[in-house]
Image 1 (cartoon, rainbow, N blue to C red):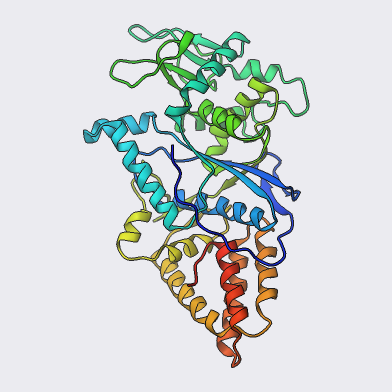
Image 2 (spheres, one colour):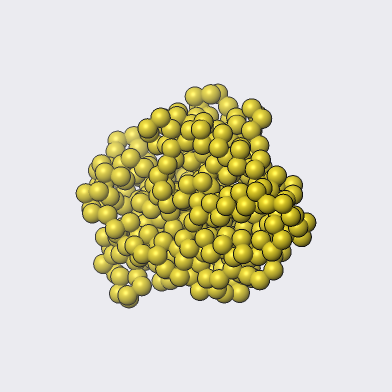
Length: 425
């Protein structure tokens, strides 16, 4: 599947240092050593509706990581998936009378248009669940053969060949310090996991499962549902978690550097993905797991199911400059839960105007210290609010001064572009 058009990134003098990042699995902020190559997988959308600011917040956060790594001189291998066949997509297609493939293509195109407008650096590989099925089938067959998965007989009238991952058996076989054990990523109790599993696409109450927390690996074909050749598994389609694991392990090193996503993906999605990876290849999925906070509107988490959404394309259509949307998101630390308001957007529009005016009046010798401050903020757990505050102070001083340096203005514009993704031109 094609990705979106790549945004050019200016080259800056010097380089960023190592990034310190909060690791959900380790429950601590850790330093990721500078290296010639870094790698990142960020879970993508299920394309049944337009990109909202909760999505944008996640992709902008990991875009900062991508930019800081590049500024440090690293080559970054970046992969993102799109879940272009899944129950929510099929349900929306059925409700609207639109073919599910058409709906997926429409929403993927809109998502990519939003990402390009927000100047999110494009992934090297943008991979759909459907195209990954030929890679997934042999991996599920392997888990079955090794006793780490099982087929579950259906109720009367239901298929008898759904395949589930056995989390209990996988945990029992954890015979190395780095081996995955249930709860390693999320650190939740079993009771907490069961509650969330049901809320986030799992089926803890299905009779016959070895554990309520066993996730589906292969869903046997049902009447009226799309399905694909599953080899010895029979016709069907893959489960959500195994899709991302197989895509990541096909295109990235094992383990890759950072697994990213929203905090609602830590369990079950990243937890189960880590288990699948270890069971398949006895190598951790990722060295680090990082998660973004939730974005709210009117006191509730922004979500498609609630319908309380602020849509990026709607803001763009109303004439809001994408750079202002990006600034509004970056005004909040990526790990915080925060609320979208009109006042936040208004402040970001004003901030953008101020910065653009200030680069024409940059004080001589002011650019390099600011570049150091931005780098220092972003390498400290992607502290974008601190970076924005540094630019605000620089702009205030520039607008209060009398002398101006075109060279300093150009360097500040390049730094804000390369590191924060904001075009001040």
